[in-house]
Image (cartoon, rainbow, N blue to C red; front, side, top):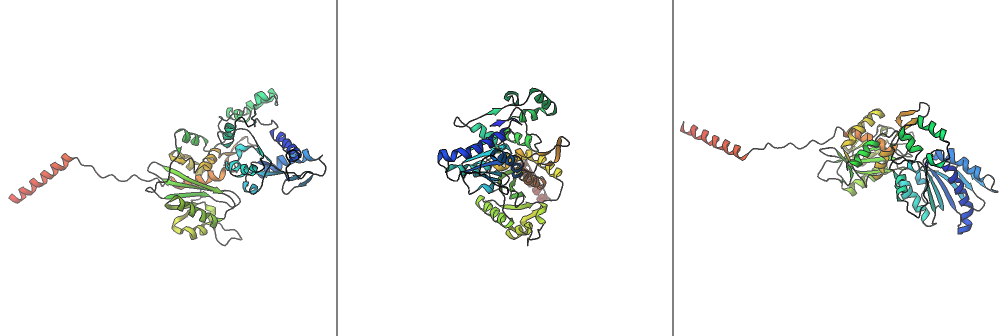
Length: 419
């Protein structure tokens, strides 16, 4: 369901979720039924959806609540629970009978296919995708791929009748054309507001630089750039310098892994890919050590790869790193399969909106796309000085010139002999 802002999609879908939890277990003979609402971030689910869940279940006798887990326990044994896609691994190992993915355009692509979809399979559960468009991302792919077996609904502000015309007119006056088209008229074609590299990625697609490029074993060694974190996502870009730019031939991301685990994982990935590793570039905070840690992240990587293989990206401002990314991205090509998650993140990486100033701030939004974006910008900062130089060409001599020089040399030799 693609719907304009303030259409009431979240309230409607949570109401449907509660009704499903009350009715479906009896109709389909489900035991210990589980229903979930997933927001892009956990705090969004807590601040918005949890209030709706409690309001809609307040009059159901014997309903209990677990505030710590944002879970409502219904009298028939069914549960309704809220999650955030910023930590999707909390969903692993569970089953679901129904799930709502709210603002799916703001979630990392792997949440649905890799994590949520398998949870529905053995229970034959259902899923609802709701939100407003944000370019050609995973939400767009789901919308385009939904066949006749799906229920599809598009609510545009100009057609739904849910917002009065004078309010629509007032919104149009205070919003850009792209903002209005995206937020009110549900356009997937509108430019993503505040996108940092959006137009550059669009150009990369149009010019064929998102393709099937592969690692060249006869080329330069692989350089790896990263944005690291434990609870947040760590993102790793694999660069191979070329004479005319760079090939981003691989990408990896995950959360919950510490430095030794990542060192082992990267080493295994390089071995499987046959990559000749040049250097791993870590962000400046890899030098830091927490109170409980014995070694820094940099020291762990030194142990795994050697000091000559690990270095720290020079400390600069975020704006300098972003400028470096914008400068170099036109010379980059991306492997569309290996780097799929990273490519989608670079499309969605955007500046934070300042509600007080009514303008975009200089800091990127801290969401699922920010870590891949930071990892790419760290790499751009060092890679812009590492473009390969073309091999020196040997001077070419024409056959005539070589023959003439040989005749002159012999003539000089004979003259000297006669003398």
